[in-house]
Image 1 (cartoon, rainbow, N blue to C red):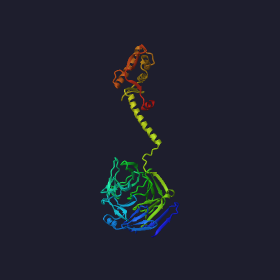
Image 2 (cartoon, one colour):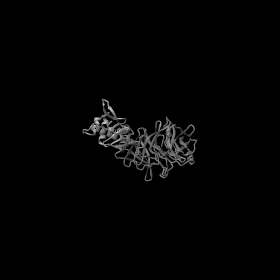
Image 3 (cartoon, one colour):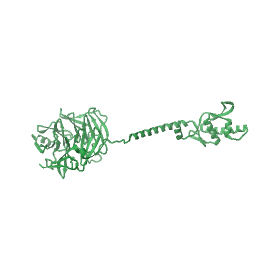
Image 4 (cartoon, helix red, strand yellow):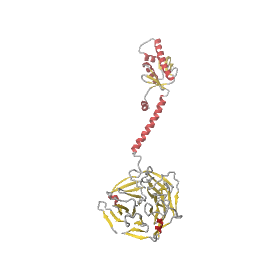
Length: 465
């Protein structure tokens, strides 16, 4: 068996190796998987290759596995996936259905189900020592539920939930299980190449097995490159690793962060038609170099120091406002609210008032022009409770006239002004004659009902009050 080792002297000091697969490059019907001991294995219909220091082949005890496959599907990653549960290796039909477990040196079928493929491309994981599948595609629809394989009855059953929120059905999501929560990121709801049906999801949520409900976490940061894979991604502690030709991406669902690691052509040639997995700190994957399939491995522990890295939030930050901007925005809203209150206050202030400026008097939405002496009289009455006859005479003229003549001029001024005010307010006499409160012998005049105020603008009212 020819083995190729490359000890890369580029500044990363990572032990990187490649070796040929034990099957011919033209052979496609096999499964690349992780054994219960963590070693790379190649599963065929007749036996299994395991890589220790070299590839070692173990024939199955009989041909029962091959006979079962003849009635089902070809043994490849499009039709089957592997998973380890309770230190046993399982082969399961992609989409649920037939279940095989490695016992007595062969894969034995243990299910009582059929080849229904109802959850093709779903998220596969182990919870409470049971094999689960979330989502997937089957029978022309994308699933939004979770099933599990019950080994007590050897059938698939549904995980019931009490969730008010249920994410849309999908297949090929990125996912991981942390304690009692299944975290799900993205996925698709359309077949590759389908017209007007392909939809890539950018949501992040989890299913809480304790509370039996889905919880929305947020929208995926667009800087992360979503991947659509039939396989579970390798996991170190609570982090999953996604490998492509450009990056090794580490996703931390607990802290909602992701980190991209890159280094020249360190991952070139990776063949994503096969799964990747981790044993201790060694990452295993298959590459395709000029049509030749190779098993690759390298030490992950030195990646952080040797690769270029960039970390981001897993969730898109829809709110980029700083605390300062929050405060400014709050003050702006408060200002708008204050202005609205002032507008209503201003309307209440001018309602029922007789307003005036240099040339006109106003009441509600009507106006009338006034003379200078009329304006002077109104101005005085807007500031004082009454005006005496002699003070009105002073407004009319600074000349000395006979008392009877001043009386005539006063009456004319008051009558003309009252006539204008009547047309505006419909009040017979807005300005009436009274006795001077301080001296009953003296005539005086006051506003009968409405209040006279000098007209002011809204801005003046705003800052005056």
